[in-house]
Length: 209
Image (cartoon, rainbow, N blue to C red; front, side, top):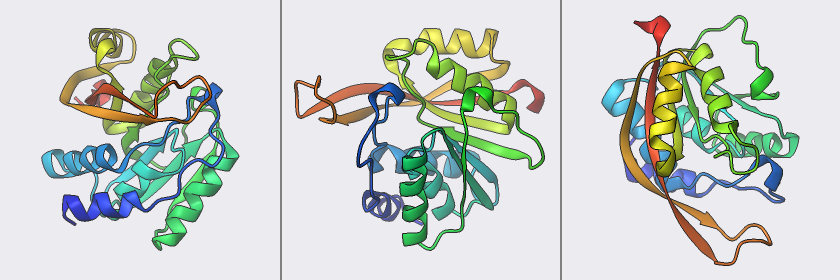
């Protein structure tokens, strides 16, 4: 599947009806999501025929992108039941067979099926400090191959240091810097849209070395 085709399909997905600020729910745009998964597959071979987990999947955009690129199996995990319902409807609309699980990522104890790749757009930690690193540490425990994640560019050195020192990553690489368009979703937003610079990271867990 070509990049533009993938972006077009992701652009048709339903997004949050009633976003929850306490969960930092923002839609992952089709532009970022398509490039994130396309890079994971075409540069590293981490999607096709792999078991992929989408942490904090929201409406399912990243996981659906993985499924469209030929992942063997995709599991979307989120704490919010409403989001999982939308994600499931999005997957059904595209006739994709995906699994969705309601859980708190911070308390996740993965058993059974081996996850090759974790993809995620975690909370940036603006509402609950450290939320992004909580997600990353759990992802690096679960993934056997790689973790792809988005983090604000302004936190780059903190993310790198924490991943290598505290989250047992053997490598932490910024693949590119992207523009995250945050739409006007909440009352405190003053502008129709805000651009945030984010890094697309690829982390490799130590156990894979």
